[in-house]
Length: 193
Image (cartoon, rainbow, N blue to C red; front, side):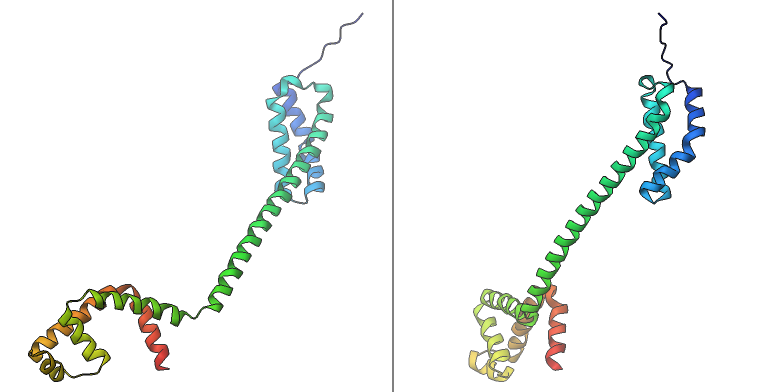
């Protein structure tokens, strides 16, 4: 009885096979993928895997191995591509839903009212923290429309003191609203028009 000796891939037989089958395998891969770069990548991946597993591949079955591998690699590529597209589409859909939600929220809300309320609340808190005389002077001048002289006569102080207290009050408000300055300017311009 004759002993069957299986011949394994050597570097030389591998290189010969690579040169013999590469272009043909690229054409086959292209027929599956319709993308030259992806086809070349698939064939390179096949040969890389074949080299890593060369001790398990026989020369007489190498051609069949390559054809089967190119088919499998292309199918794997297409499945991965479809999966990536599905994931990408799902992400886009979620982003669209979030943007629609934000758009509806913005449409439902009047930013002038929103910021006015917030600004008014900050002003109320700052005014409440002011010393009593400063709060009275600010209220009398800005909300009741009293002059410096009228405020000075009412509180038994000089107009210079009224001016100093009013400056301190306005400076406190200005500092507490510094983050809202652009919004205040925008609101002021919109109210004027």
